[in-house]
Image 1 (cartoon, rainbow, N blue to C red):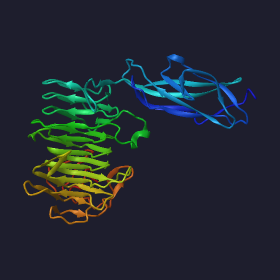
Image 2 (image 1 turned 30 degrees about the vertical axis):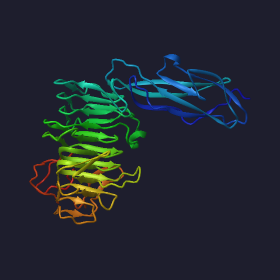
Image 3 (image 1 turned 120 degrees about the vertical axis):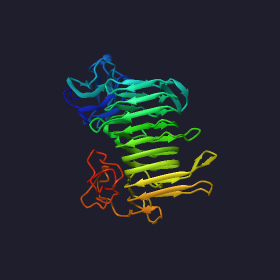
Image 4 (image 1 turned 60 degrees about the horizontal axis):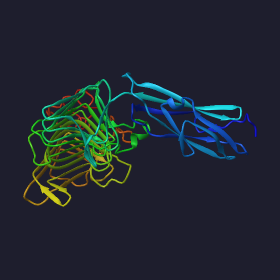
Length: 443
């Protein structure tokens, strides 16, 4: 055996994206290769030892130092690496480094470890049980005010706003959710998440590596129950949830609305917005890449202007239309019916299915009234509810695959909208002219 012979590695550096303090990251791994025709024994150790923020697993054993680890001739060994970051007083992301040292005879080699750490406000569920665990962040008549000084990380369940409580979220705030977590605004509670074009509010999973950008259902949902006070979302991005926004009455429909302006809800495993017995008003919103529906509306009052509902979901076979509205709501063995009004003005509703609008009327006790005015729709049937609509013409999005839903110069949506809707800018803040374009984006 040549004591100066070298090993080879699948990478010379293992990197982690932002890791929140006290919350472990995903596990990364790399391989150590013995390219020689003889077995070798190596010593493996973390340079930082027990004080390191990293931990390693070698051949199924966890530790910081290993001796006489054998790699057979022409074989390899997996090294698994994890990082945990301790709190400190830094508000900006900071760098954590270490290395894994390999000694083989007189030869010393290493693989660098690199992670970005960040402090955060942690909200950990401490009440409830099973899938309905929560931490009350605003009790009755209390106001929880989330600022953008540090990110917020929701862990172990829901951050809950109790009845008559309020959650205010400042522009530029980033909210990260661990697996299964969400926000729950209980009945008669209220949420005000108002960002700006320059400082949007972000709701997303806490696994920040770009590898997870296409991993849907990283977290649960924002769940809002009935109230007499309006909820507001403006310049907000919601992504990679199971359901983006679920708005529903637990016992009765009330007068309060959920109002969305200049929002993006995308990459959800289920629906972008699921609504039951409630009221929603939305303008200049992009709802895209949803595993079930972009909008799933059951009983209530809905008013949508200048939406782009684009569904090219490709993670699994999608059978449901991008927009579905019904006067029926089924839950377990119970079925509820009620009047439903859904108005769409200057909206694009398009995707891979031949019919991206689905309407279902149950019985004659209640009504379903759905109108589509000056919309661009993919649908095989010409319905009486379509007024001045463009059907089955490709909207000519900039790039469907990359979810870039701005319009190309040859889009039939350009100058085809109804004027006088009161929506004077688009989702990016670009002014709309006297003949507005259909959808969330003005060309």
